Length: 115
Length: 156
Image (cartoon, rainbow over the protein chains, first blue to last red):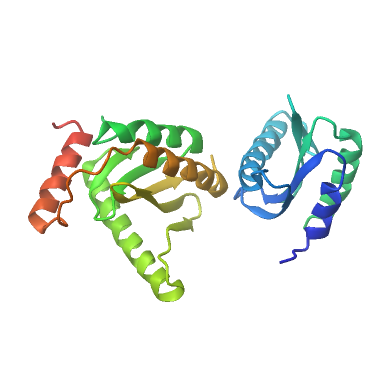
């Protein structure tokens, strides 16, 4: 079944090196919609990334930095990026070969469409 | 204060509590007999929680059977500040039930994620079932319940 986020997720998942993308509720940690390759545990990533985004938002608030606009987590074989708006967070899971700059631009644009 | 009546439950449950950041947790048999608890300070509260959880589980299972042909196995109720999650863990010794209470320190997504891990860990850690015993009668049930509560709250 298609959701209002299906097209947005499909566009992100077509980027080179992106193996999954999810729209998740920050408060509940439950995936609203996802587009992920076989073997990617999108629901688990969604729950953990939503928690991470929430803590980052609280940390930035406490530090007086304002609203979190983009969160990037680099790891040995890839990374996770998140961009949120209101209670919804857009999360992408990527391999190391992904062009993060391009992905960031696309995610920031897509995050504006989250309602 | 002990966490579990039987030692094999303790490690998976403590890990769940640590990972999922829940406030209260109680593991019980589907009959309502307590197996482990975390966060409760009074035996009477554990007893009430177990009785209510067993009743909720039985009702939810029956509603599921009536509506869908299969019992509902998880239930989530979000309150204003605290939320409850109740889930069934199938084990070689029969179905156990986990009732947990959490707040904004975690989320239902995380609780569900770590509950799935707990299910796998408990199933792997459960020792083989002993000789099958008939369902407990009222006297046995009361005796077992009191013995388990006494163990959990250090009276044995």
